[in-house]
Amino acid sequence: MHQDAIALAETIGGGRLSAGAAMTSALAAVSGHEALGAVCSVDPELGLAAAEAFDALAPNDPRRRAVFAGVPTLAKDLGGPFRNLPPRCGSNVPMPVDPEAESDLARRFRDAGLIPFGLSASPEFGLSLATEPFGRPACRNPLAPELSAGGSSGGAAAAVAAGLVAIAHATDAGGSIRVPAACCGLVGLKPGRGAMPAGPGYSNYIGGIASELAVTRSLRDTAALFRFAAGATKGPFPPAEIGAKPVHHLRIGVLTSTGSDYPTSPERCEAVETAARLLEGRGHHLVRLNWTSVETVALASACLFAEIVSVNLAALFEQFGLDRALAEPMTEAVIERGRAMSGAAAWQLTTDCASVSRDCWALFESFDCLLSPMLTRAPSPIGSFPTNHRDTDLHFHRMTGFAPLAPLANISGFAALTLPVGADDDGLPLPVQLMAPMGGEETLFSLAASLEAEHLWRHRFPIAGLGA
Image (cartoon, rainbow, N blue to C red; front, top):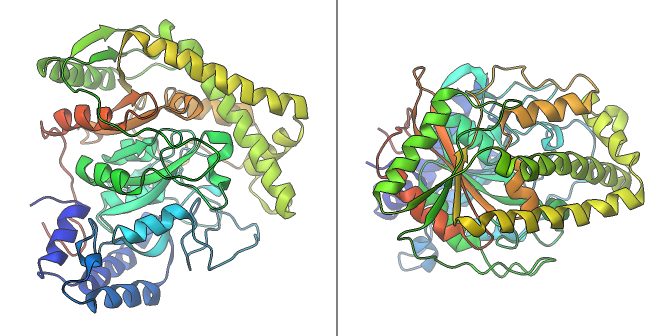
């Protein structure tokens, strides 16, 4: 049996499980795994009422035929928002909250049949590649509880990997979908710029570097949700042209080294080689790359990410009059970093981002898709990304060292997808990243399908309500 959200929806649609029973199972799973730190807020009444309303629909109601009809899910405590589940951004800073607010993407999640009932954990304001906000349980990796589930969508990834839910909302401004997915053996897509709606507020675009979608257990779940939710964005960026590229004889840029400053472990380099050989066997042409060919644009992206999130957070606190003294030390330091930036320097960031995107397009003239490591090493131990200090350079350097190629997709606007292509000796996933220009999501899906078909990774835990 498939262990993904579509399988759960098919079970509900086939009458073998009610949406109410699926929700009850999900609620019980969340309650039984509090020590995982994956879920920061639950509204059982909200979830059960929505599930019961679904079960009461007439048999011929078109809502019963939605791709994820009746499937419980979690919204992330950052981004969105989803109605009646207002995010607190992993923070104890009091913020203005409108419980009725709902983003365009959240409405599309509901239209796809998903039923949100709680919030997955996030680090404060998404500022870390670990999910360990002050005053709350650290989010642990279900595959090895002494390790982090990643960040900032760590709660979402932990919940999906542990089977609490089959699919969960996630956001990505510098790897925050892909890094947790990679840590937990999941599929994570950062959609290309202009592909996903983020209205009506557009606050999570962060100057165009952020995207929202989900972490999932299967490529078919990711592709189905993307195809349902993408397009007609009605926002500040032109809607991306979503289309399929011929999947035969693509040129695959293959990068296994990430340089001496940010070295990737041998087994993760070998995972890229494994993926490359499999794609070559499917008729694709490999273009071998070295770190020097991407180093400048990759590290420029990491630097720009740090500056953009700093000035964005400073603007957020100023706009809403938030008290930064109540934030974590790292958050307060990032805000001060942003406040110290001049208007001219902030404006220069837009030009620099455009330059990175141009350079990335030039890089891709010699290949159609970039295959690379997603992470340089195994998931980090809990506490590896502390936020109880004020050294922002050190904090951002640590994140670059863990996922040096993650911000490149955000700054350039390109689409990027991670999935596991095996396990290491400790049973932890060996993830790779596939990246394609804006509008290239279908190319990523086609290539990733070839890798997933090899069944090199198996999920350890069944989905609540679905069974083994």
